[in-house]
Image (cartoon, rainbow, N blue to C red; front, side, top):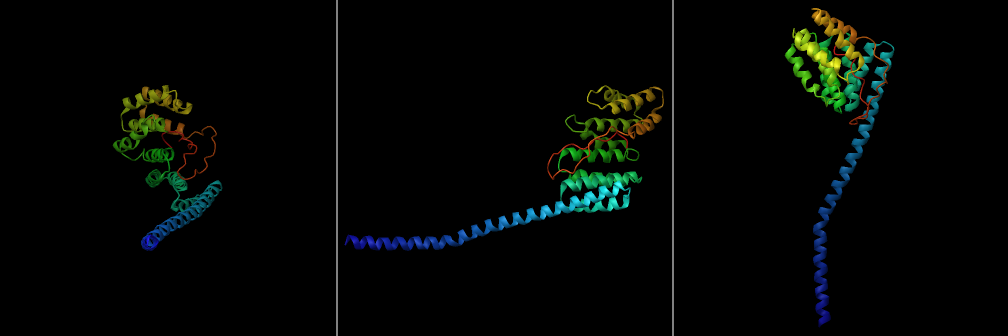
Length: 257
């Protein structure tokens, strides 16, 4: 009799387990399907990203090659293709190159828009601040002082990578806006800053000397000319992998390009 009860109880337990397994099966299958779909989506995205980056790199290099041959039209077209790729690193560098070409063509407003676009997609602060600084510099001759001050003030934080260059650009903006005394103070600080490069200190000394001589407007032109003098040789900047810090780009030669 005891054996009979045990046998019945075993059969009932088996039935409950079977029902439980049947109830859980759809959930287990669903979880497996979600995991599988997630893996496939990740794999597909990785493949797409690699192909996209390779295409952007090829287009960017084509633009650099065109520049070396003084083919600005071909260079701009190639950089435009690289800028359309969904890779923040190459997109930022391509937009910076496009901005430089527009600035060299005497179109500062278009250049500023391209620099702003580069700043918006930059993968890190180094490239973002460089783009923002170049946008402000492009507008030095045309934008009102208040706009330049708004653009440059955040970049002047000593913790930011190009704060000295931003301070020099704002000093130039003050000088051009007739704020001669304030500009002289800024140039004095720059001239005494141990972290300032030698060419920046020399430009500051030129500006101070001309301001003291009553030639404030001449100082603007003199600093601009000094800023376009060939800088010391620097290493070529290679496009960084998206999201990586990499090495910082060479800073601008001066506040006015």
